[in-house]
Length: 195
Image 1 (cartoon, rainbow, N blue to C red):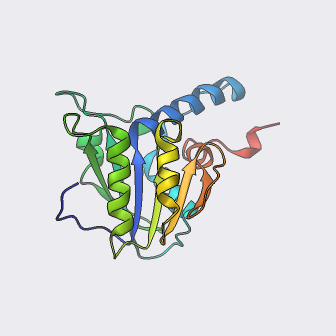
Image 2: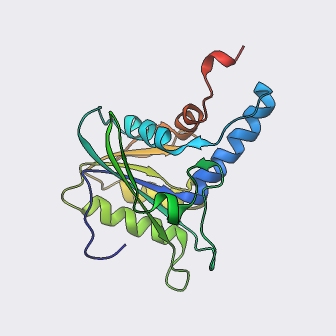
């Protein structure tokens, strides 16, 4: 992210590879359990669910979704288990509007020669939390790799933050939601399918 950034009042910060791996694991497990093909995650539906989990009420909201991802050399980076999936061509710089608000999407590759994914996520999170116009932040970090550092940073947080993780987390300065529920909804998995 560059110093001349502008941020929306509501920001979703996503570790792209992490959420993609969680989506893959869920689809494999639910295909086995439900004995049917599980479609890829509908990205717009998932972002709607994340926004709702973050306490955003339907309306004329401005919501910014920022995807941090690993650079794949000359190849494009993909969210293999999402639709759309191409971070450069189909997601970065694109927007959509629905009853929740207007979502703008951006994708940033980790500059491997300067930092790593964990530090990049933490630095970006700090910029967002310190940005005056930002009111509401939804975070999807890789909790297994650098979650402890995220929770440590959030102790001194004063903004409305929702942490989406696959299991409950101990800490202060944030609310939490289970990441799997939003992904399941965006995959078309319904509670009524379970007997």
